[in-house]
Amino acid sequence: MLHVNGETIELDNEGYLLDPAAWNPEVAQALANSLSIDMTDEHWFVVNHVRQHYEQTGCIREARHLLKAMRHEYGKEKATRKYLYRLFPWGYGQMACKIAGMRKPLKLLLDL
Image (cartoon, rainbow, N blue to C red; front, side):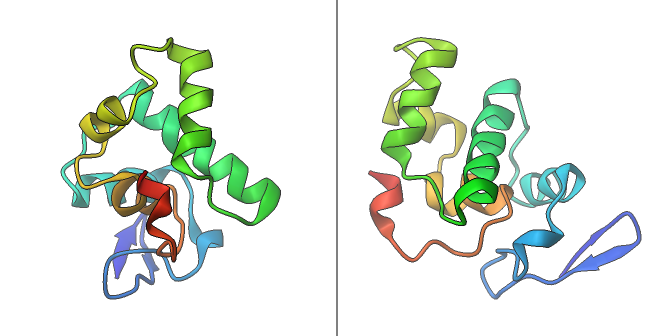
């Protein structure tokens, strides 16, 4: 369980939200804190991009598509798997998707 602004948010046994609709930026910050991630603009770009894609499609964005969006926003030097792993050292699916309020990704292909 995660406690944010007086509310209790249900998590699975690995810390992913059971209900993605319970997500908001304060929940994201609490999840990031639990993972020892200091959220920068680049972190928020990734999290918001993942979240927006999920809200539009009901699916989690694969990392390769995220890297294309990062290339457009930050240039090719930051649009690499290596940079994404610097932001989220345990992996895109394990950290970024968790902070974005997704359920645990079923496909490991998210972490190309």
